[in-house]
Length: 76
Image (cartoon, rainbow, N blue to C red; front, side, top):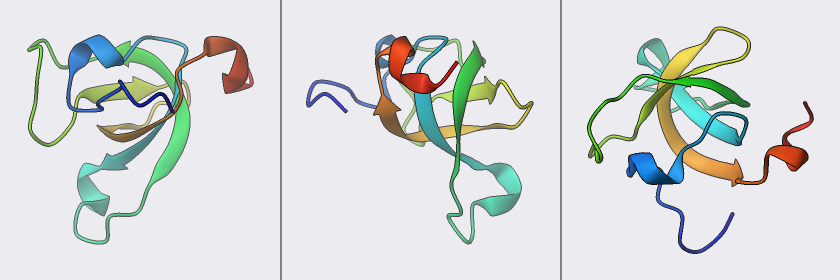
């Protein structure tokens, strides 16, 4: 993860990057799911709980960490 990337800022999230998300049902346990961003669902430029995305496997959640901001490293 680059030091300049913030998972709460939309400009840091792009389709094809690898991220960790927390789904709505996992918010209490803070269980993370790792995957590749398929679609960015949050329209605003910033969200205090993280930008909401849909992963390639269909899971929807808020980004809590950017694992790799290089699409070539995402395993796709």
